[in-house]
Amino acid sequence: MPSRIVLMTGGVETLTYFSKEMGKTFEEKGYKVFYYNLEEKEVCFSRLKRFLKPTETVLVTFNHIGLCQEELLYHPQYGYIWEQFQIPVYNIVVDHPLYYHKHLSDPIKQYHYIGIDKQHIRYVENYYPKVKICGFLPLAGMEFPEETMEEKAGEEARKRDIPVLFTGNYQVPEKFNQYIERIDEEYTRFYHQIIEEVLEQSEETLEEVARKFCIQEMGEISDAEFTEVLAHMNFVDLYVRNTRRGNVIRTLVDAGIPVEVVGNGWEKLKCKHPELLNIHAQADTRTCLELMQRAQVSLNVMPEFKNGAHDRVFSSILNGAVSVSDDSIYLREILPEGAGICYYDRNCLEKLPDLIRDLLASAEKRHQIAIKGYEKVRAGHTWKNRTEQLISWIESV
Image (cartoon, rainbow, N blue to C red; front, top):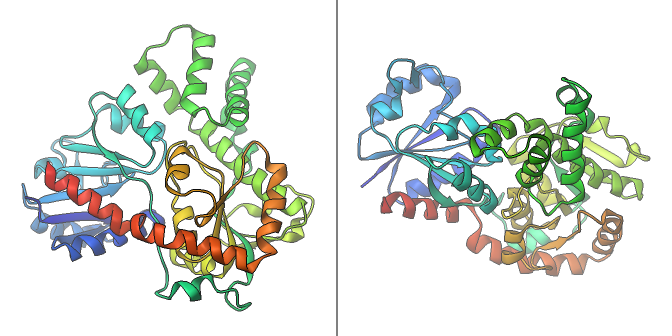
């Protein structure tokens, strides 16, 4: 029975934060936890070799960190240290699987895929038969600091002094034209058709739209050929994601609603009232949680998650802000309208300003919405909950 957990830190700040949140629960449950810090690899590697014990240790990681041929962890002749010590790997993929085509096409031994979106899992099931799928584990929320719900949702000016908040970077979509237009006019038209269709038919997944256009252009295409093609379309996903983010924020500031954004690139957003866009530099997770505690409304713009959830939704609710988000199948199932969240239609953004104004006009309404969502999220959608689910999977193998 496994009793030792290796968690990766020192890479992407957000994923490090998630790992440390999970580590707390692993330790509470009696596991010995080793944090492998990529920024201190020489010191950590010698300690890691002493920590690893076959049949007793598993690696829990995000986005294949520790599986990207990192120095010391990988040897061209012997493979990964996880393979050498026969360590099962549980990898939580927080992006669309298209970003990890090479990893999924030839997974290492004892590899377990964990998806944060049920559609992503279906994609892996359909196209990567070698991959062992562990299950669905959506992203989770984080609460900071320890306060009562009344303090979190209270409307004192000093506490809730940010009317509307969005945390996340922005890139001008046209930045990705260098990849879209790099071959010829035919390819440019092909990619822009996919982008337009994904944006217009927002209930369809990127892979559904891309496959349809691939068949139109190339005729029948094998699964292996399609995944190879889609793996080279990450710029399409990024174009769509940033277009949606920009459209939401632009819609609000153009309607005269001030918005505070946290992240890089927002100074490049073209809008009628840039003076209403209060830009904070990219910040760490802790700072974003603190800002959520000051927010009345916390916006979410869903990436390609049609049947999953973003941690922004759960963290906003846990920190007393009303989450305003476009929806997904999963979100609608677990959080009905008014339970910490209000939904907007990504296809009818013209209605979003009135929704925001209505919330900002009533502190009592916001308070009641926040209260209804808080206990529900705290009971079932924290990293403690997710870690307990993961433990049940690990111990059942």
